[in-house]
Length: 100
Image (cartoon, rainbow, N blue to C red):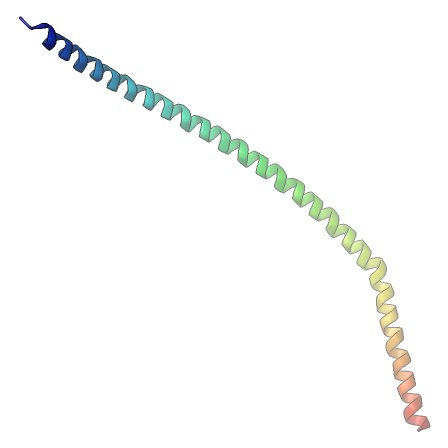
């Protein structure tokens, strides 16, 4: 027969063993849930980033089109002004050379 002290010690060991097994099972289940949660959040994060990139592409396209229109409108004027300025400078140099 076992004494009262030995019985308490064996119950303690059985309790520790069952607690360890239960803890391992809980950790394994939690790890699977954690992986699923992380996977779901990463997919949501990628979707969010893709939507943001799409909006950024659209905005950049609009800005690019506006820039092209601005250059087309003002670019032809600036080309005309620069060629006019070059022509005037050439005529002034020619007058100075011929007159001097």
